[in-house]
Image (cartoon, rainbow, N blue to C red; front, side):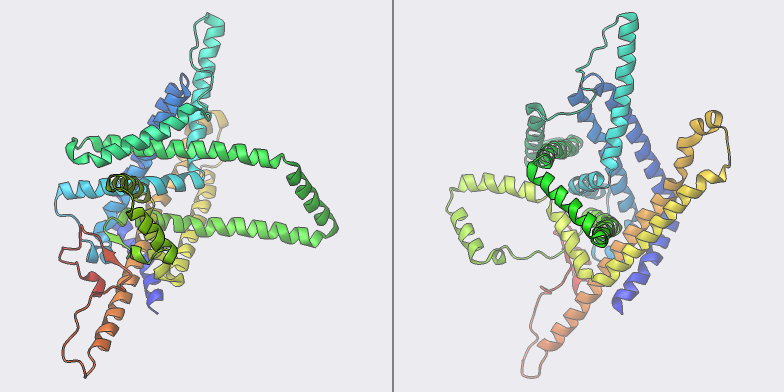
Length: 459
């Protein structure tokens, strides 16, 4: 019953947030689109001369969209009642800026993964490559006609797997680690450079990994064993036609279901990462991980020299800290239960259907128009109408879903606390046993644990 109540609270919370904040959400979304366009144009111009230099600018376009996304989520915090109950809003501007930067740094890795998985990175790369090709072609024509030097490296902005690209990943990661280690000794504006380095090493690591995976998969696809498997599948399909139909139906179903389920869960995970600077899932004690094998490994690790252990711990914690918020957000959703998460997936799917309907209907509202005088001039603005209407609703829905997750966990923690108190107050005990709510599915970080709502997990 509680999960159903929490599910019904999702559209109510989303509607309240949208009603109060949609102008700000719309302005931030437009600012992100404008910044992305400017950065891709600049990166295309640089990339037409040097592919590596142009690719060093391209992550800024993705970072601009992430900055806007984090800002949109944080704008909605004042209307998220369950979240505010355990994580009150910062009281001064310095704390708000610190919270924004922490959320931004935590969101870079999951946002880049989400950006690449759903094709947004491919869209940016295609727009960047088109701009590079346009400029390179124009200069090449000028060279052929006027005899001027076209310049450039001849790569048309396309990165290849070279020692330079690998070195960029290593150098950017190392510089980012150094900035994090010595941040107290550096000016505050170095935080902008740190965010850029984080985006660069994640982006180039994704490019290097994708190129490497492409090499491996193309090599495997040309092996004789894969050819035999393909021939075997075709032979079985030709003999057992219903089996081939069933196989194709399962492939289609898994592909569609994966997109329908994973997309809203990915959005909810990103929201959990952004808001997770204030609310995190309770961690499992380190001593309980790995059993006997884990204890032996930790014992051998402690036998290493202290200086070496300190350096290894710094590197390991810096790397793991990028994945920890993702795991915490997933744990929160898992503990919220299938009813709430399944209902949120359904609501998000309905929103996608509304978006598809708008994308179909908006161009038809203008009726038949001349191709050259109307569509080639206004098509970009017309096709922008549907995203402008949907994006504020999407962000409000995701924020409402996350707030309901927090509410579900708070109510469950309150029930568990009451049951524990009732069990401890048996007649043969002479005093009330002091306890902490170690089973609570929600716990605060150090930034909010000492605040007025530090005991929210036991309410």
